[in-house]
Image (cartoon, rainbow, N blue to C red; front, side, top):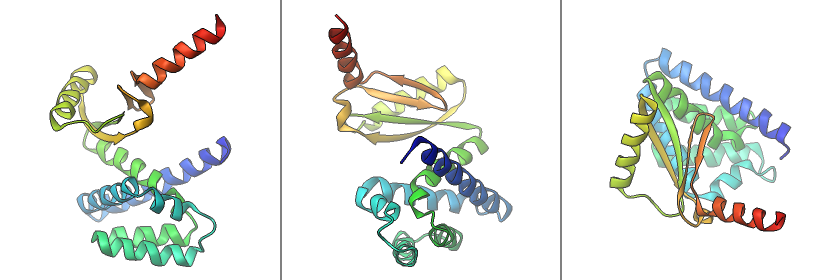
Length: 186
């Protein structure tokens, strides 16, 4: 997808997430909606095939509505969460659901006064490492921090931390790429 296409997709994801957030807040169902979106995000993270299927133009919107309805049932989503993903699929935006879960989590964290940090590491972080990282980020940022961690083996080692528009990259992949670039220029 082009960068313009990504921007439009991201904008749509933000709008849908905001609509769900506002409705959940209004109906006092924020905790349920947040749990629903977290379950959905986990399902997408665990199954790249699922994410590709909902994004694929090869599958009809009706098929996506049925598949996502079955997923909602399997995940035991609330009626609001189930209706939300149904509306998203019927509107042809099922492929944006993973981005919507991320946008919703950020809105919910901001509502609680926390900031979300996206952490990527080559190997899964232990509970102790996550706790130490949370403490260090809380100290550095002066706010509560909620961590979303993902494993990205292509980083080889180290990790990346993204908080808002700020990015800290200590991955071995980036360091190797820097050495490779320096060698090309020499």
